[in-house]
Length: 241
Image 1 (cartoon, rainbow, N blue to C red):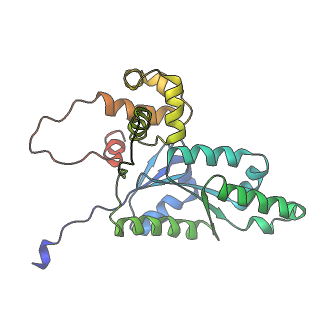
Image 2: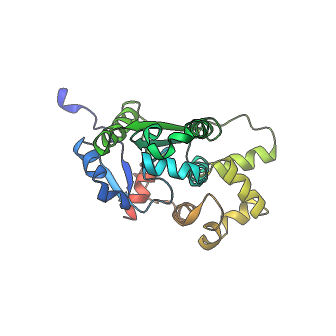
Image 3: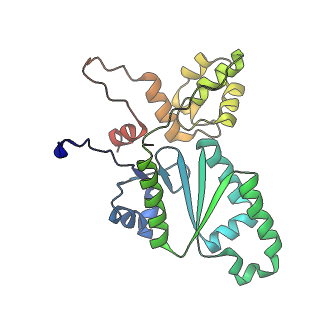
């Protein structure tokens, strides 16, 4: 009976191909967590289809905070994923160049957390970062949260509520992006019939997500009655590797 244990599917981490030179994807794999390299539209790492992680050094993190790039990035990440994490290697408060702007930096960090719903994790360097990402993946695996998480239906009282819910059922479409879709198209049918070139131009979607939505809408249903496997985001990326 001990040999009939069910095989657990490991949680997969998607890493932007530009992260390869940091050595972190290899370090994550050394922790026993599978990593797939992709050209990610936002973020450096995606875990379980619901967590997006951006990795920055303390210097780049602080610089992008003051020039506003980080807030724009946090906004786009929050629109695409339920959980946004910034992993910062080093301590921004110890940078001499910004020592005179300590209070502004603290206020900016507060805004990033409260206004944009981002989590900030500090590490000492790439090895700690890799261990943290691997730990997040293992935690999700332990809870059985693999692939795309399907939301439970909220209480839907109006046609508008149903339209928003349907649009947010597409991968990476949050409420803000769904509202932009409703402002761009007249009906859900019009949205579903739109070409990829049009979908990709909507803020919050981009080329990769437009390709995935287009595939979901246009791929034929499987005819095999024996096929009961649910298609996940991992399946899509695996087939298009």
